[in-house]
Length: 265
Length: 166
Image 1 (cartoon, rainbow over the protein chains, first blue to last red):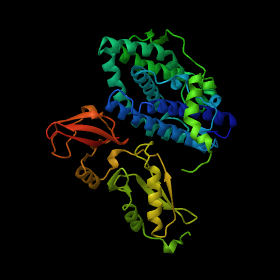
Image 2: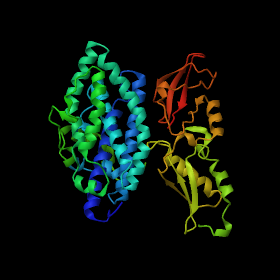
Image 3: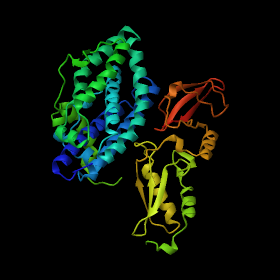
Image 4: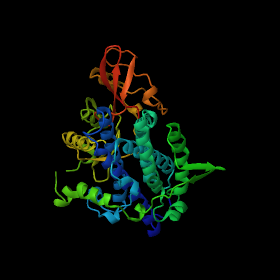
């Protein structure tokens, strides 16, 4: 790709990579909170593996940032302050009940897959290579997510009610995954990444019919080929505006690292 | 210590040494048989640069394997750097036939060759590594490590693990 040398392009790329990495790190962290606690052993194993995958993805994106001079991946994950995180607020919400976990993981994984598919053609070759690698791993997440969403959507009255409540809460936040990080026009121009609006539409194209087939109501509809969402997206995360949930999460996640920076294990 | 071009071990000797390094998660199979070594070159400084590609990006064995490779090559007097590369991405089609046999012997079903067309495991016929029956059920697409799924054989009533197709 051309002129990564201009500070403008570099900054737009860096901003984007933080958004990708931080979403993965936090969703992975939330998934890891189920280790030992999930409703059945199979789900416990699955969530622990998903957590490990997402952390691996985060590490891969932090390594790209390291290559751009942003510092060591451990520092990026464990020594940055809350205002420097670029994840969507969606990714920092507490794990909630099992229904919320299932719904969030599903919405996240489809968004991730749609994004990676587009990034496989990025003009920034290191990012394109990472995208092509990670896409394959996502297949197994979606297999897990979809079977839980389909099952719980209509299993019992209670499971349906909880799934609907989870979706109602998650959906406006999930739209925040598509809040454009700063520098979108620059990235588009350089061919680094597609517009968030385009990714959001592809995501809606997939999640809306699937959730509806699981008997859930989704506040979005297609009119004359254009997607309309009927709720206000929750933005802010991509600009570093977060909730107290992220502060609490970082306090727990970063505590050990910050006690003895640079310690060797 | 770096090696002069004349005292370097042959490529064949290097491949043989790499073949001694086992995958810590499938300890009967070497990193060469797993297809995670893409190749190696001598750099200008006389160091050997080995290109390794991970099965899964979150694989915790990556660092262990890098170190094991460096240590094994040091026994040949070779100073090596192990570079982690992602292109082309690893696929389970890179696993050698010899490794597939060894996997079966430890009760791990090898992944089918897919030539790039991966069917989701749910609908795939997976043969039991113990009794060779096709009457098996996917219990969980996740298992004890990132690269494994869990199955149950209805014929011999044994649970078993399968190396995931990737």
